[in-house]
Image 1 (cartoon, rainbow, N blue to C red):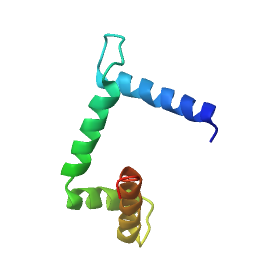
Image 2 (tube, one colour; image 1 turned 90 degrees about the vertical axis):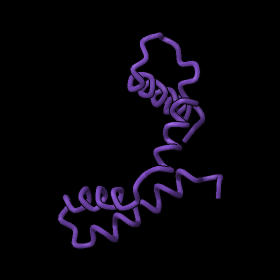
Image 3 (cartoon, rainbow, N blue to C red; image 1 turned 45 degrees about the horizontal axis):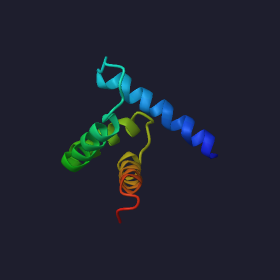
Image 4 (spheres, rainbow, N blue to C red; image 1 turned 180 degrees about the vertical axis):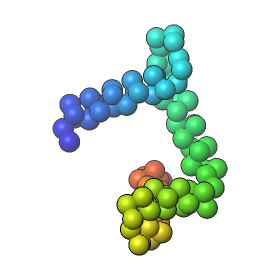
Length: 87
């Protein structure tokens, strides 16, 4: 991805954050920090059994006999991406 594409992707994401935040003040100040803290708390506090069950249900919709194995693989990849640079 080029730096221009990365900047565009970031701008789109920040705009989506603003829209989802419920803010109406037309300011983005502190938005990323607020989101970062929220995501960190969500990741920290997620119930592993609930996450697994949700993933299995989602993958089960594909009628895969290996839904649990696929869910574990997906969770592992997502956690690795979230912790990139912290491991």
